[in-house]
Length: 99
Image (cartoon, rainbow, N blue to C red; front, side):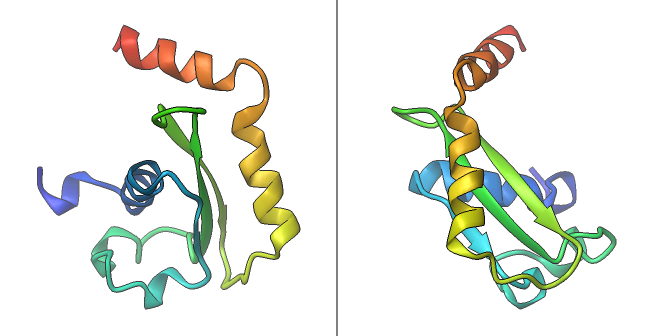
């Protein structure tokens, strides 16, 4: 798969799922893990990405900001809580198995 075929969001989603932890990026322009051309044409400057699922993650849910943003702990906690809402993990699992 070519870098151009993957969005920056997908890469952070994969990071979150593989590490099984929330990824917080204050300024995407300073993150050298992601090639600049994947995000420079987007509005994204900051993000939080939380894995979905109680066992191996079945996906990840992200929140994005158009400006540099040091995400406070209460916002990180809110993003992490969203995938735990009953049915979200199951719905994502069904979508993946239907694809």
